[in-house]
Amino acid sequence: MAHALTALEESEARALKVHIQTCADCRLQMDHWRESAALLAFETRPLEPSAQLRARILQDLETASNLEKKTESLKANRTAASNVIELPRVSRRSWTSLQTWGPIAAALVFVALILSLAVLWKQNNTAKQELGRLSNQIHETEQQLAREREAIAILTTPGARMAELSGTSSAPSAHAMLAYDKNGRAILMAKGLPLAPAGKAYQLWFIAGGQPIPGKVFSAAASGEGALYDQIPSVALNNAVFAITLEPESGVRAPTGAILLRSGS
Amino acid sequence: MQSEQAQPSDVQLLHAIARRDEVALGSLYDRYRLILFGLLARILSNREEAEDVLQEVFVQVWRRAADFDERRGRPFTWLITLARSRGIDRLRLLGARQRLAVSAAQDASEEISDAVNDTFQSEQREIVARALAGLPEEQRRTLLLAYFEGLTQSEIAKKLDTPLGTVKTRMRSGMIKLRELLGEKMKSFR
Image (cartoon, rainbow over the protein chains, first blue to last red):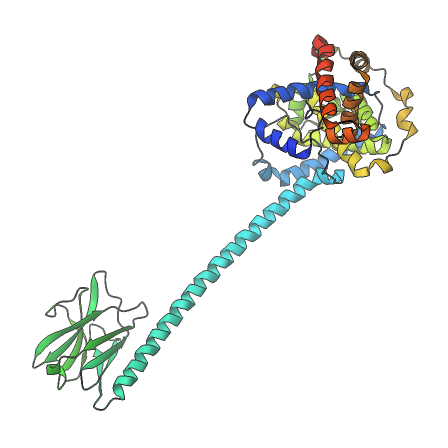
């Protein structure tokens, strides 16, 4: 009843508004009380507005129609048709013109904000991707640096040696360096390796006396770079040939694939 | 002159307005301008402000006619509720201290139209006036303060220096009594 006269306190009106959204009985009751309250308008004397007002209103319609076209898509999101008119509350202190144009402006601002958010979201995603890419690059660089330090450490020990592996006709752009000390501690750094097919990996071989001794398997990055720490068998420390083939990723005891890189004999 | 029966109903006019029929909006304006303007002039006590709000109301009707749902009430109620809501908004904006008692709004009885429609509404005014007269003074005053000044129950309690519970009881009793007094006559209202 008090709501029909908009005499409820703001918190009460808000609670009622929520309630009637789900209570058909109360909604019906409120509609009935609003009918009664509206009759109080007959308590006033009818007055004639100025003769120009009618023309002014009709003139306004054109402006309103133009604005409607602009906000047509926004209107589609409105809730189902309803006779419930937003009634005034104590806290509402707005210029009445704003009540006419305010919702339109607010909707446009809202759309602009959404678009801005979408752009920012996209930019944020791009930045995140770039950050991820740079992080990976840094990580790879750090690993590369660590390997080079390891290689330097190996090469600076007495009796250390380095073998160069060149790509065969199966991988002409591939190239690798194998650094190892007198104890067989070795590090392999390869470049220009083709991306290994799924289930396949590169395997290092130590060929001594014509017999291939299996080394470890490793994979190559998309950049074609690959690295491997291994232990060269003592029998292969002198006068051995180092080779790389493409094998099943679990590695094999005897080579099955063609030699992609090999050192000089 | 068209007969009463030949005139489109309020619902038909609103449907036509929803289809962007300006003539229909003009007809609705002609039909309700007197009571709506009288209501707004009563709320605002200012003719210019009342006209400004009435203009906004009909632009709002133009924009929201498609929202009207006849299952939830009559067009009359929809229009009155919309106009009162806008009027109270403007009243609060202006503030009580800025309200001007414009005599033009108070003494405009000579401007009252003598159209058939107005005669019809005049009868309705008498019915409502009799019903209000049948209410105890404190109940009537409570209802009118809420309706025309847009005061909440607590604001009315403060204004009348009356306990809030008493105001709530008066408002409830007043509305029930008013409805009883209007009774079957309500059906004759537009």
